[in-house]
Each structure stands twice: as structure tokens, then as C-alpha cells.
Length: 99
Image (cartoon, rainbow, N blue to C red):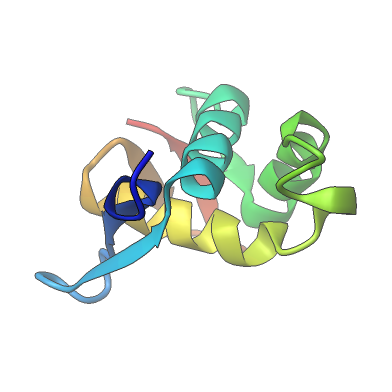
């Protein structure tokens, strides 16, 4: 993989039109883990519940002991919301589910 292919552009639902380039392998691992734990049905999961469920699914070589999982979870969440793959329920605390 070339250096350019090691990065992926992600979006942010809170900043329409803004893209950020991040590590492809870490993003894809987090995206896959997040999509595997989120339900389609209401009420969804809180971000804390989603993180607790997905950390054991993450590759240890990329996220040793869950390191940096919170940042990558938020990045994947905002990107997948922008792409309308997941939905945010307007609850306190915030809940996420598959679209």
C-alpha cells in the first residue's frame, strides 16, 4: 500500500463539506466494529454502551488495550452519521442506531 492509500477521507456531520484524512486501517477496524454492535431497533445504544461492546472486537495491534478507541469511535460515528449509515436519537444521553 502506498502512503496515499494508507489514508481515507472521512466526513463530519457537524461540519458539512469538511473532510479529514485519517489512517485507513484504524478507521475501517473501528467502523466495522461499530456497525457490528449497533442495533437497527430503537432505542439504540449510548456511545458508552457502544464503546464497551466494540472494544473487545478491535484488533489489539491497532488498539492495544482499547487505546485511542474513544477518538476513533467519535470519528467513525460522525462520518457514518454524515453518510446516513447510522442515526442519532435526540435523547440524553445520545443514542446511536443503524439507519
